[in-house]
Length: 171
Image (tube, rainbow, N blue to C red):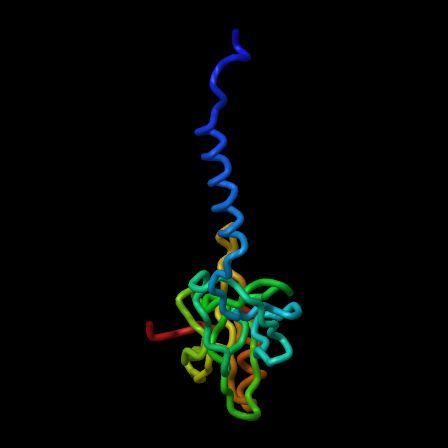
């Protein structure tokens, strides 16, 4: 007769211990640390302000804390996303009176890099990369932005629009 067999005391004890351990784990306080999240959508190239950041507690050691002083968004950051170092770039410090001109840039350029812009007649102008070109998931490169002084901005913009400009940079 089956109903006269021994009750499964060991199984009951194992389940009871497992439930107690799970409850203790859930009730224990794990170490957390504050981490920055985007409080609103941040456009690419926008300088991060204190109002753009919302601090939330995350488990310690989960993410590496970025430096948040004098930085801008290297890519668009959606509201609610964690702000990690790979999403940030140093803030550009351009002289007053300079203009940013969109143009095709080599993929090896980075923000703040000095470049030489050579016209078809052989003359050249110095510039600073404000926003480097990026490659999308299909392998297509987007235009970047190069800041030049106000005197030569018109000539650079016209040459860039016509494709008559060569960008030189030192890797």
